[in-house]
Length: 306
Ligand SMILES: Nc1nc2c(ncn2[C@@H]2O[C@H](COP(=O)(O)OP(=O)(O)O)[C@@H](O)[C@H]2O)c(=O)[nH]1
Ligand SMILES: [Mg+2]
Ligand SMILES: [Zn+2]
Image 1: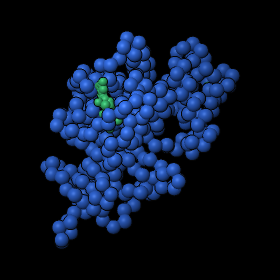
Image 2: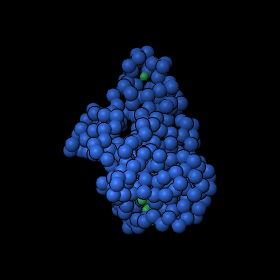
Image 3: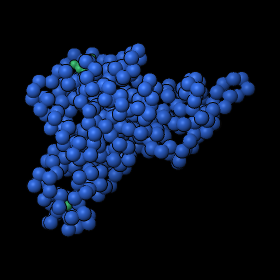
Image 4: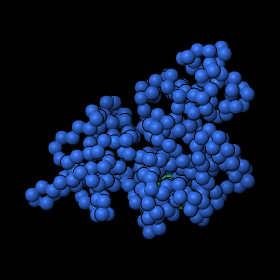
């Protein structure tokens, strides 16, 4: 068995157990778990390869996935693209400033990762350029998310601060790197793997999103053990099928408190005897998390999720 580390069009790079990388094609018509996807095999898939008589290597079998994340094509609504499979950890890199990251963006990501059952590590990068109020806000965010149950690590890819701590947390895992453009994902991977030299984007204005400099997802082996997956141009997870009632399940602290609501199908917006509203009023649930929750519900009403 080998693991798919890169996919460029119809070719797949498979890393064998002995470390050898083999270029492969896909054999015949693959149907995996009834998924209608544009790619039958994804980065992170464990596969069996065979060689044909003329020496071409083919992927002949895919091991059942423990999870996978998708991007839905906006126009062909039934078609999906599998971004990556078998992820142990989703690493969401954010910056408090340069550029600022909204908590709604973070909470949407956390909500989707709960739905996918993928643990998240929050990495706050660029600590080297933060002034005292940026740092104060960063500490508040770290306190909030640690309390909710998401580990956080503050780093500077530029100075190397916190990188050893981050490296320890990635050891032996397949980690998917996500986050807005310009937050320093590629720079972080370069800091973790000296000599890899991923292209980074110089962004002229932090008010603009950085340019996407890489185009294919790639799984990169960490010298300390494990892999990182860089999904260029992908800020987070694709939309996932969630019903209105499920959203509250994917906010850990809302879910925990919601057993105290009077109605089993409480939306926590306006119902009487809502334990969530009580907890928000008492500041046991953070206002920013609650706002993100209502904002996702609002998106559903606008048809952004199906
Ligand atoms: N000051 C500072 N700049 C950083 C840091 N990490 C990345 N950058 C810069 O931020 C910009 C975007 O980085 P890049 O790695 O391309 O971001 P990506 O789009 O998330 O992959 C580049 O100009 C980097 O040099 C950091 O820790 N501190
Ligand atoms: Mg990048
Ligand atoms: Zn409620």
